[in-house]
Image 1 (spheres, each protein chain N blue to C red):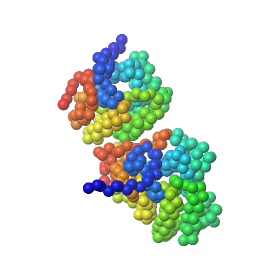
Image 2: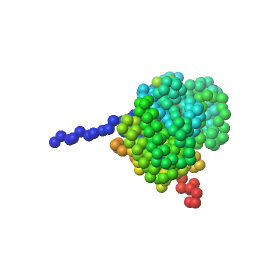
Image 3: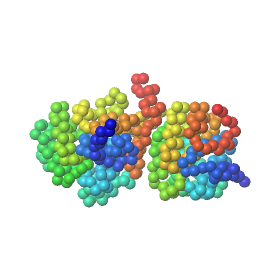
Image 4: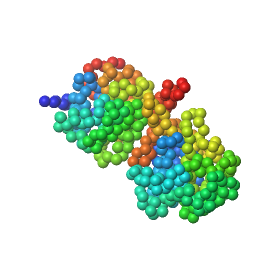
Length: 195
Length: 260
């Protein structure tokens, strides 16, 4: 049976506000457990809507993984960065998936997220970025660090909670130190931490 | 000592998400702005959204189309949620085919002389004056100017047209087709449009690892202390959206340029 990490829900409940920016650190083997343990309280306890940006896997795979643990994400909008330009398939059955051609089109991801936030009905929203280490495969360190700075400040200004998933030992030090600097909260379930 | 009050010009608020912030409130009223861009950069959408936002505020708007028939233009623009065909039906947005206008004026010819140019200016100004148009788009001034063979005549045409439209309080976007929007490019096809325009908005693509990102950059806007930074744009169903382009990603990849 799949078990959620309840301490993540407790930490979210105690510390987080809408203009927080949370860095969620995970390892290679617990990424989905940490993701689900963060998403479940956001959706069920805080009744938030939002946008899930998937750079690590195709959105269909993520939606179906959530389904297997009984989590309905049909009202969450997904921005899929890998299926169009990398995997080459956008013919999917889920209407809540939007595609951006490539993980290198960082500004397009930001604009698409802002567009979706203008169109959805929920008043309290999050943006879940999965993940910084996946973006680091395609983007140069300085550009990614600059992007995360822009990303965090854009959503804090709009009172949209940003949740940034990250495998620290697969993330360049410059990017990691920027995350430490700009995020307001840290949920640390990473197996190796490099500073 | 008391500081003198700072004079600021009234603005035509474009209503385009992000553009008014770049322009510090909008385009100064009565300006003639050149929107110069490469193919597929979003010039027509930008121009049409400029009119729609005006129409939503109750302004009379006009669009002169020279690059495609009005029927095709409207079919293409209907996919955007910001556009409502009722605006055309109710006369808030008036779309004119330049070919039809040429026929009315007896200008079915390959090239225009001075008298033809004056007749064309008078026709456009009369339409603007009669309808009370406050927002005008000519798409494109490049296609229109192909019929004017002399550089001096193009200059006179654009200068006189801009002056007369400004007198009528009409804010105008002249769409210009260019083949390149890199740092060494001209912002207009004939080289004279950019000198006459009160403002220049450049639109193009940045190539990043084989992908094209649309950008918009305001390089000139008389009467306003605007941002001159490159902004990434997306053409969404709600209209054009802009965000500052990442500084480390604002240049086209050098390795991808031919000959480098």
